[in-house]
Length: 235
Image (cartoon, rainbow, N blue to C red; front, side, top):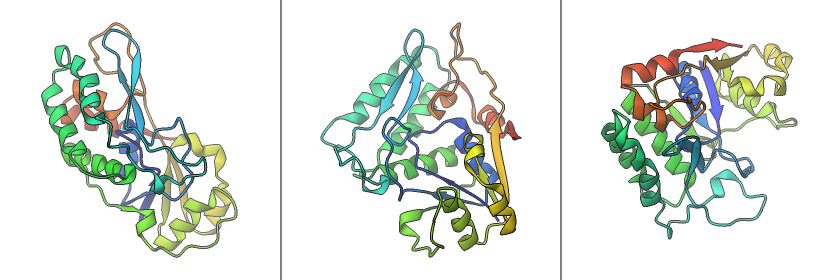
């Protein structure tokens, strides 16, 4: 079994979906400390004229040490309306605006206070739109018994062992973080999957890379999106 473990990102980037598509099991890892200014409750889209801007789900204020699965959405704010207003400028130039907005409406229709549940719903709906098989579990709900974690890279190792995984796949950004020998000693292949950054037409002079999957959906049909998701490399 091939396994990936990722924190729950809000409308994540294309590489997140590459991991999902390459794995047999995908675990949404939500029992670690929330790091502010990350991707749990926000992501990036195009600004109307040039550059990029954040889209964001407001969160209830918490103590600094709050865990991801303890985060609550501040639903007293009309964040859904604000999100759709920020996306409205795509209507003038994006050929798949209507299809994309239908997907987004399905994602954010979920009534929940949990950012983890919202982000899981986003992954399920978008993967269904892309026709990608998505076998996922939320770690805090699994009751999985794992060995004691002594170093940070052992979360993935010990979860992989408990799940019976033969290969663990991670984004390339964590390559220097892992001790590969630990995985080899436990007969687990450790793979780092990167994406070949391919530009697509955003109908403006300067291409903005690394945006939310929303941007891909605005400018590409499902076949083209899957081609971008599949354009990967082992690093």
